[in-house]
Amino acid sequence: MGELIMSAPVAGLTSKNRITAEDVVMLRREVFGDGMVSRGEAEALFALDQTTRDKCQEWPAFFVEAVTDYIVHQ
Image (cartoon, rainbow, N blue to C red; front, side, top):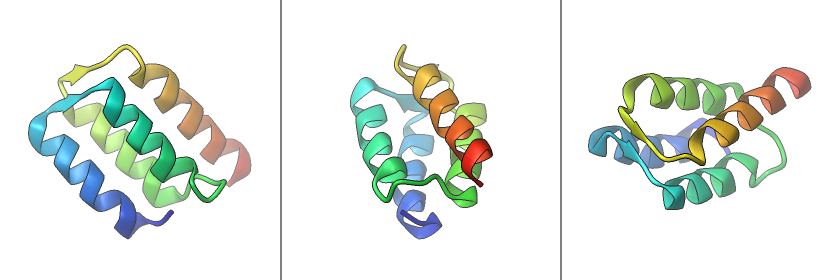
């Protein structure tokens, strides 16, 4: 998935300032849908992590997994 696809989901999550377990499932599909995490997706996840106040318990594991995947496979 590319940066343009990530922008709409991330924008929606940023505006509500909350990440739920359902949001993590949606992001997982978007980020890992094509088998790799792009630089734009990793940057979007970092921005989301920094700007979202209320994060569900599933978020940290997903965030670390996605960023690690990007760093290892870039």
